[in-house]
Structure formats: structure tokens, C-alpha cells
Amino acid sequence: MQSQKQSCKKALAALIATAPPEMRPACIALLRAAHSALAAGCMPDAHKTPLHSWRGLMDLLAATATGRHSTEILLRVSSDLLAIGDRMAPSGQVLRESAEILVKALHADMYVCRLRDRKGDWRLHTANRIDGGCLPLLAPVLEEGLLRHPVMQAIGAGQSGYVLSNDLHSIERGGGSIDCMVYRAGYRSRLTFLLREHRNKHPFGLVMLFSQHEHGFAMYDSSFLTRCARIVSLTVGRRIAVTRDVLEKTAGAMAHYGNNILNIIRNQTEFCSELISSLDEVLTRAGTLADALDARLPAGTTERALADSVVTSLSYADLVKLSGNLGEIQEGSKRMTRLINALRKSAERPRLMHYALGRDVLALEPASTDEQE
Image 1 (cartoon, rainbow, N blue to C red):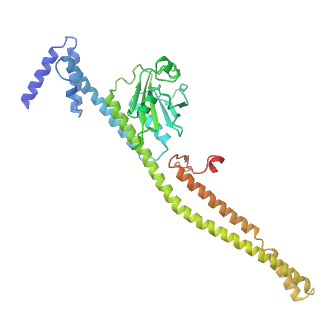
Image 2 (image 1 turned 45 degrees about the vertical axis):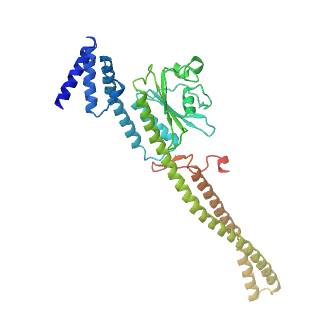
Image 3 (image 1 turned 180 degrees about the vertical axis):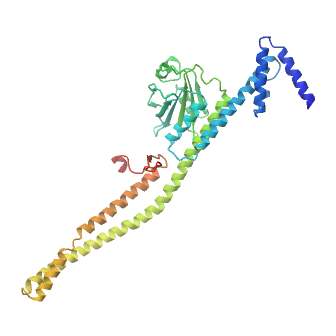
């Protein structure tokens, strides 16, 4: 083992000796950095860079040294994404929380999140600058049929997990944007992650990171970006899939048991309404007979007093209020049916509202009259 180390040192020294004098200090500095990366567990692929010259040695040392940096970023991104993975949230909120992690980890200046609507267009959901400054004018919708756009091309191809654009001029000027507003605002490069759910090839969301530097994401190679895109897509997609699975199971159980109970309540209410109708007819006839009896009995007699009491008692038997209460019960049953249907819809489009105790709960009340209908 010791002899192998000595022979390896001699081979490295021989390769460094062949380098120009001004390049030798750089080789030695990279050698130290690569040694630290190897000690940290980074395993470079030496077969991709054959060591036939000092140039090959520098390439291998640089790849090894930067590999440690990339590995640390991947670990930090995956750890941060998994840390929020147990929070149930709508897809838009998941995108925003994930984008906030990515924009800091990859040293971007701004992020833009887009969600795909039912028509297939990509609508702007949220955007923010890392310094909290004003945002540039952003297109509210990106049409998926815009095949000249590099991100839309990647979506159509259905293979890549990320798209790197270093020219943010408009498409007409050979760039990767639909206009020059982002470029005029000072942004020069864009890194887009295409997010997919588990076993869903078509992306549901886009996280676009913008940098104000020329080739701002050039320090990340394609292998790193591919792995990062896979981690982001798996964690974010899995989180949304778990949320939807929980909501679907909850909605299914509520739809089954809740609707059964509501049907029983509705049937009993309708039966009570029929009983009230029949009782109202009986009370009406009894009042008529009591009036007739009261008219035939002599005034001042005990029998006349009893008949007057019957007439007075029947006059207080008002079933209108009871019928109104039963109608309110029926309306409450219909409202519960709408809430159950809203719970089933929330599996696809969950809406949250802030609860008094500081927690978010599902908003099941219809947001508009059309939705209620």
C-alpha cells in the first residue's frame, strides 16, 4: 500500500513538472482542494479524464474539488426540502416554499413559480427577489404551444428536468424570453426546474431561478443540475402526491359515511314534513268542529266554557314555525352536501384559510355563487 502511494506521488509530480512554470502553483493548489474533497467522501470518475498530460490532471483535480461543493449543495437542498415535506399544502404553496430554498442554495437573485392550468398554459403564481426589491414585469401566462421558448421545448420533449438559458433577450432577438423586460431589469441568466409528480411525466409546475450575472449558473455542470432537478422533482412531487392521497382518502370516507347520514336526516325531515301536513289538516278540521260545537252550546254553561277552552287551545297550535325549523334542517343538509363535494374537489385544488388558533385549515365554503351552484 505504501509503495502504491509513493508511485502515485511520483506520477503526479512528473505530470506537474511537465506543466508550464506559471501553471504549477495552480496544479498544487487544486491538488490540496481535491485531497480535501476526497477526504469528505467525494468519488470522482477518473475514467472520464485520462491522465496523459498536466491538462488532464488539472481537469480531474478541478472536477474533484468542485464535486465536493456540488455534493454539499445537493445534501443541503434535499435536507431542506425533506424538512418541509410533512406539511400539507396546495401545489402553489409547495412551489413557493421549494423555490425559496433553491434560490438561496444556488445563489440566485430572483425566483418565479408557474403552475399549469387546465388549458395547458403556465400561469404566474408567485415571484420574489432575494433582496426584497421590486419585481420586473413578468408575463402572466406562458402558452405551452410556444415551441420557440426553450422551457416550452423541454416540456414538449418530456425528458429534461431542467433548462439553462444564458440569453434572456426576447425570442425575436435570439434569446430565451418572450420579451426583454427581464433582461432590461438586469437579469442575464435563468435556470428552470420542471417539477413532476410521482409517475407523472408531464410537469405540473415550474421554478425559474434568475441571476443578474452573465452565465450566473455556469459553475454547476450538467450532472449536478440533473441530480438537483431529480431531487427537487421527487421531493416536491411526492409531497403533493401525499397531500392529494390524504385528501382523496378523507374525502372518500366523508362522502361515503357523511352522505349516508345526510340521506337519513333528509328522509326523516321529509317524513316529518308530511306528518306536519297531515296534522295541520286534522287540527284545521278539529278547529272547525270546535267552533260549530261552541255555537250550539248555551252561553254561560259549563259545557260552553269547555268548548271555548278547546277553541282557544287549538288556536295556539301553530305549525308554521315547526315547519320553518324543518326547512332550515333541510337547508343545513344541503349545505353539508356542498361541503362534502367541496372536500372531494379539494383533492385536486385545495384552498387553505387561516384559523383562529394560527393554523391553516381547508376552506370548503364556495368562493363564489357559481361555485356554490
